[in-house]
Image (cartoon, rainbow, N blue to C red; front, side, top):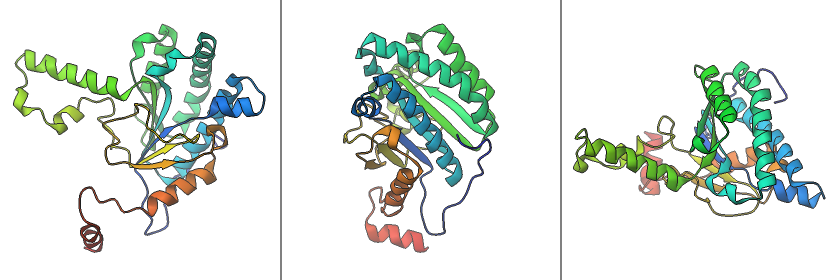
Amino acid sequence: MAQEHVHANTQPAGEQLPQHVAIIMDGNGRWANRKNLPRYMGHREGVKAVHRIVEACLHHGIQALTLFAFSSENWRRPKTEVGLLMDLFVRTLRSEVQRLDRNGVRMRFIGERSAFDPKLRALMDSAEQQTAHNTAMTLVIAVNYGGRWDLAQAARRLAVRVASGELQPESIDSAVLGRELCSADLPEPDLFIRTGGEQRISNYLLWQLAYTELYFTDLLWPDFDAAAFQAALQSFAGRQRRFGQTGDQVEQSRRA
């Protein structure tokens, strides 16, 4: 981030802000290819974009930002690229945790960690512990994460509780299942952003995105800056979130 201490700001009265923003940071490799650079350079530039958006979220007072850093399907990429991504992840964690901590950011990692090197797992654990008491914002990094995996592991935990007699099958509803998901301690995302021109959610937060506003942009992730983020926030502010109600009902509740 460009500043050591970023002070939260409030949006002008009347404009709704998301509490939780979820992003698929797509286009790092294509950004590098267009510039005749190694794909790894695109991922390095993508880290700079993360700095900008974390700073923007702090500025706007957004509670949570969840970034899809490495999906469970990304292991299918060439081994060299995966290795470079892991090295970048380690270096970024070592260099950024102190700065995030000074800015009051709590770090969380969601996903299946067992596939990672013990050194990386230890760094993730350490970052979470160091920043656990911060309250300015929660930064969630989804690594080796998949929405179907998230649902499957939630169902598995519930099955164990049923088998032990702790839980009755008929008591399982959406609220009970939701409390077993990785992000159960956070509000569900209000705004989902995907860069890079693709218009799909790619097995990301499948349950949590049920009522999320979706925003797609052709910008590649390394080019996504504060102005582009502001455009996404403005799009969100102009939408009417009905959650099954009529538009008239929503307007009446706003005026009440």
